Length: 154
Image (tube, rainbow, N blue to C red):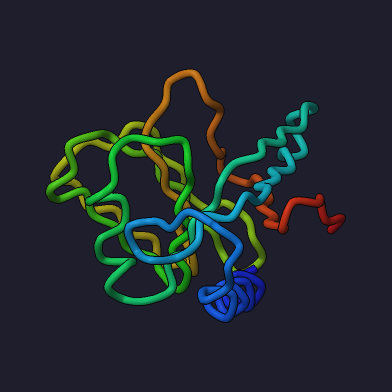
């Protein structure tokens, strides 16, 4: 999963100068509409699929800032090569999910308040978004797959 995310970030960087009229995030990366697909754990029968804008953070500066300078929105931020997040300076609570190399959620948190630090040594990536009570979030054991708009079978 991490390799695919890095490849996607490289593609986005190459397209950075294109005249496609894409909006850009605070980190300068295009806000691409992607699909985050969550395959439920074996003990859950339903399958959740939500289409959302996915922002990639691959550089140290963007990963350190995370959602700090953004206002509340419905986009998710994927922090690649990351296993440690903080909420110092955050004005809003965030949802956080730690993902391992196979794309499995190893730890998930809802509505993490300011001045907190979360770390998971097994994680290679983190997905975070502004907390929303009505929107579903990851659970431990969920499989996370990312595609450019079409669902991938895994």
